[in-house]
Length: 251
Image (cartoon, rainbow, N blue to C red):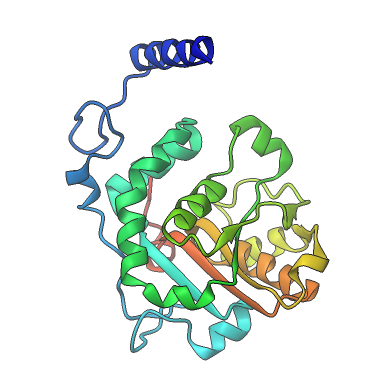
């Protein structure tokens, strides 16, 4: 055990030298997002339908979008348009800095505190949107699973099961696709691996960014067909559709 701990400490020491950790906001050493900078990333609180962006009394799916999406509810933690958050998520996904997720804990804790109504879903299970197997091997982790596990730390009555859904279609990047093209691209992209366990179950899908909703919609429909009683979704960030309509660059 002592040798294992020694190797771990040595490895971490070398990583700190080769890849020093600095706050993306203020460059403070030791954290990807320091406590001060994480506070500059606000919770998403717009009074709109997060699917179509039409005005609502509060942040909730309108009746039409509930039907279209296959979701009973959709929760959003923050806004993707925040520059600091964009940089953080980009580094998390593409620079393979998977340990960064821990620095989001204050934001996720704040979200769960503000959304205590989620406790009524205590018999639910978090199901992260899966990556295609090849991409998972390349990246070494699934960011949606990391987010789901972080959420479960603050809502321990909701477990995480990353083995319910499998992505059976290599959909590739959808960044440059239109809404219609994304829907076609995502069709039949998922398979439910354990249909027995989801019959009459309440499931909450977890993903990193919501843009057009095509990915979550296909996952929700897959689970509905498998017999889920309730399907909701929780996303780390929402990308504003208005930016897509105006062709505003986000990177």
